[in-house]
Length: 76
Image 1 (cartoon, helix red, strand yellow):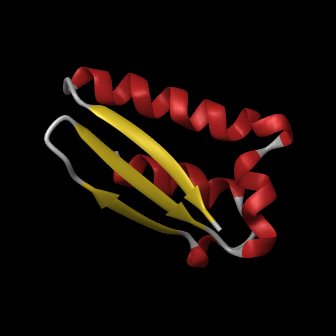
Image 2 (tube, rainbow, N blue to C red):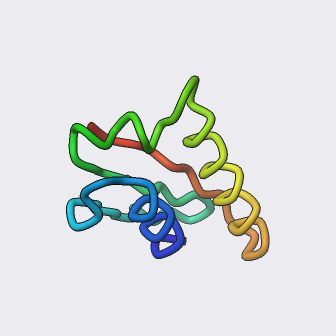
Image 3 (cartoon, rainbow, N blue to C red):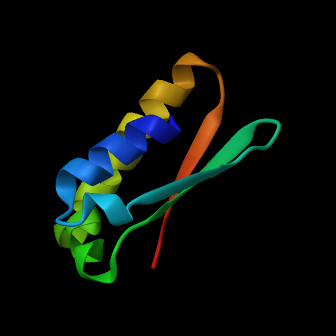
């Protein structure tokens, strides 16, 4: 899951080398934290949050296959 989010985020931003993804694992839920450069934050979130929502949808669909819940947090 972590690699999937990193791949998508690097394709969206102007500074792909500044994309950092970390994962906090829990029993049923894991949290994926995405950090990008400040100037790329708008590109990852998108207009009215549509890009972020799409990334969360892809993440929830892929995590449903492994019977876990995954949450994406975009950190400034």
